[in-house]
Image 1 (cartoon, rainbow, N blue to C red):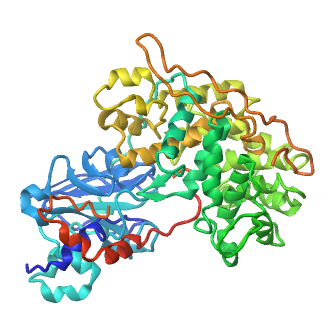
Image 2 (image 1 turned 180 degrees about the vertical axis):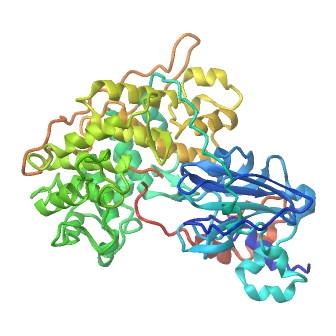
Image 3 (image 1 turned 135 degrees about the horizontal axis):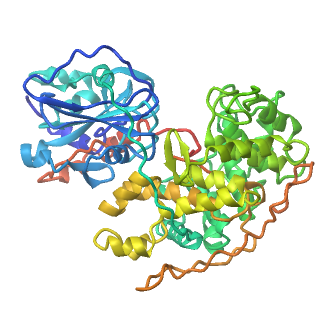
Length: 606
């Protein structure tokens, strides 16, 4: 194959792509010839299919299923058991295989996706597409698929950028991945998602978690980051999580100031309120929790009344925004935000959630649950927990008895370990949000939930057991699930696992004794938070957090709460050592524009 120097620039841009959306299941026709193909893809609804091709001709294929869906593309590969080396967006080795050592400076790991445009949220493709975003990016969701493939030149990366480059290649067919996407997905065999490893209950430490969250914010200018960029949704989640612990008041104020200075990067323009209202709702709620007025939000276009903007998105039927933008989950944030304002939650908005979204089939095992769609078809743990809290914030008679029955449904879903599962995975995110909804009236299930979270938190015993991979700077972090905890202890916290664990920790701490969402406030929070430390005979030296200053009584029928979300959620691992990378500067503008392709996503981190 013939090469030209321009293609080298694209290593840092077009590199590793995410694969998203639903997959085609054509009959399997591909075989690896004299090579080997091992493993099996996920069954529909089980998780994320990840594939590694260590050959140049599709003769050494390893197909695996990462149960559920959490974190980044790279995290899915790690969860499936692959050993990835390199930085978040620059995978250099997989299971010790380094293309640069095999093929020189033009050897790298390329990433394919299952979307037409190579992004995470694009339309489904019938075959693999070269990636346009990085392995450190999100979202990753069930039924996506990703393929890492060894390459010995940059020609295929160039071809993905410009189809006309085929004229410069001896054989463009080498860029077609084998097996095809449909063949991989059909290769499910009799595989079954392995059960989630049991998490041993532990003693959680809310203040240690708060210290780790605060340290992550402080080290990045008081803003949470993902893939080297500010992540405003995650920043809001971090502020809410800190407020629930009753400490780090100074950090909460500093982060709130950065949110207030974020202009319209997260909330969008006033003209976009029809689609950006969920981000506006979450921003209003966070500012209220921090004690900051959301009715005078500064932007380059002039000060905005975000409360007024949110109310303007209310439709006659009680839903918010443009058709198709409202779900029970984001609607609950809007209710929680408006509960603290003069006028409270509009009755129509409360009834839209209470009567129009819940499962109301008599005798259904999921009666009184809420999901991503109305009715009983898709019950969801996280949505139900947030909806119950929003109904409580609306006050009587809206909340009674629906919110209580929703919490009873949640309680029925608690695992023997104390955890709660989302998409089949017992995880700290869901467990924290559910425990917050159940608290304080259901002490036994919330105590068990806290024990589950404690079993996924890095404490002094974890440090002692893993001195080569963990340090005192990791104290307090909470892993997403048992697989993630195992990866952290085995490999330490790289950039990818740090972002994933921050998403987990900020929601996990909600279940460790703080107030419900409707009463959550940073008012009265201790200014700082003591760094945890270890001695030979004790755990982290951090006292339990003080009780949150917001009382946790149901609000009045007016819906006005005293005082002023939470979510779950490479450039191709262009692995390889480039002898002379000075040429990469020449087309930096092009690199940045390509790196931005496909990273647009919903304004909320679920």
